[in-house]
Length: 58
Image 1 (tube, rainbow, N blue to C red):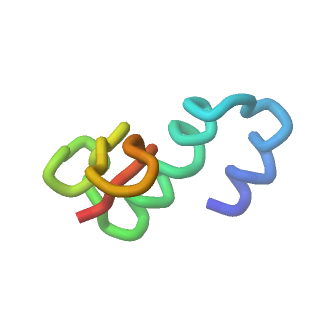
Image 2 (cartoon, one colour; image 1 turned 60 degrees about the vertical axis):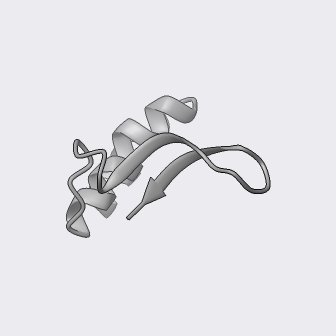
């Protein structure tokens, strides 16, 4: 994973690209199924604080 980050860091620009290139693969390594909304919610709407969260893990 660290090799992939070092290789792609200069070309990954923006929030969505960062999530797709680095965060989702890292969560997969940790054992989360990033395609299963019962495990990982993208653009989660919380009922506290700032209402929109980028990711929510169960």
